[in-house]
Image 1 (cartoon, rainbow, N blue to C red):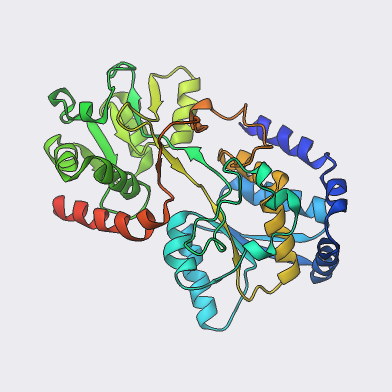
Image 2 (cartoon, rainbow, N blue to C red):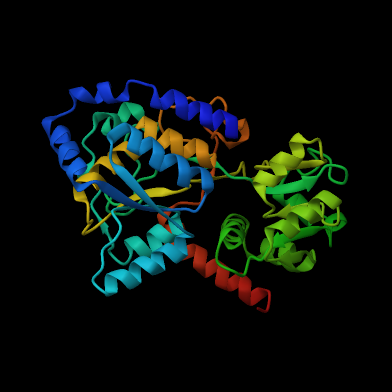
Length: 361
């Protein structure tokens, strides 16, 4: 998607978005003028190369305001922010992070300022631009954590020389004795992607299913996604949960015998909100921060970010025809939402600890 991403950015930056904003309220013009005097905005986000390079360039070109991008893993960034704030230092204006970081650290520890009241561009706030008909706030107060994306996640990967497409129709088919010793998982006892998926399966199918899948079927566990990718390619473990999705896509394009399974009959799949948007309280550049969050909630910001990370924007005015069709939620399908607030802050950790106990870790 690299060339499509760059072409999309070029088109976006040559559009007349700025002129469209000329009809916005006087508050926007005043905010923009004050933001330019502040000179920059500091944004904490993931370490992905395209985002780190393209987001600041696009924002600076649009508004003439420097975007200082502080990249890092969500948990590491949250720890850094906590330590700074304990020392009375407030360095960040806004944050983009996943549900675990946003809900269990940043929101829980009251690092966020209300975001909803700071969105003043009609392009950001008008319900006609959002697939759900309104802004999609995920926190209980409906004002702090804004969801910008909704993407169908990969379920698992198969080696098609061993597992024929369509051979697995339901998740219960994974319990067939023929697959005993033929599956591999990213370690579900550790916090992260693997434990999230295991928790989802626990919630959907119960403890007995998890016991049969993770114990009786004698799968292999690893903490290295690269190892899973190698195993599935070689056919050592033709069913893997947690292989590198980008690498699997590349190998599939090279006609290697691999395929990503997104869902089965008894669970059409799960959706992810990717990186959500939050406005830090006591922002050092409050006006530039307001400009940034409005831009991210608008078509240009969310589209540039979404294309960089293959996250499907939750807006109606973004053309997603060049996204992988499997990643676009189908109308009427019942997906498990991995970014549900209650699942993230309570159930997920309970399931992880129970699975860890079952595995004797």
